Image (cartoon, rainbow, N blue to C red):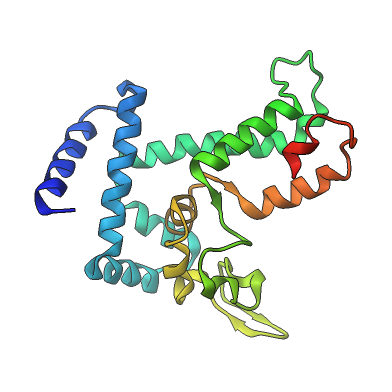
Length: 220
């Protein structure tokens, strides 16, 4: 993208930022998110942007500190947007755990078929927070696999000292996966369904659902 096009995008983003999120139309929110994500990718992909990110990673002793340092670099409007997206994801995760406990007469009831439709729509739109199947060859080959998202220093009997993901090359790989993975890694917001949680839940569900159920095809 040339300099003029970037300048126009930056100006439009600034214009949208002047409108409180609660007063934005749906189209304005989508445009804001699209332009902000493009700006974020440009910033992260620059040498200077990566240098500053790694400086914050070096300073952070805990995952919460790392997230807070990165959140301080973002606008309040963007943080509110991610919080709103996370609220929807948390509702879906809650439904995955408790959907069988509600009666169809309950106002909060969502059927298995309806819930799966919402899950698949979310996954199609925002992707997973990756945990198993990565685009990165380095992450797919990383051992031990359980430590890819490790969030503290710990000594393992087999692997020795295992450090947090933001302290080595895992960070650079994770933020290149997709927006959902990047935003969780950097800011701690779950704007996508965690891949591991979904796949484990789907695997357990396959054993509970009758083979004649209409949702069987949705679980393949």
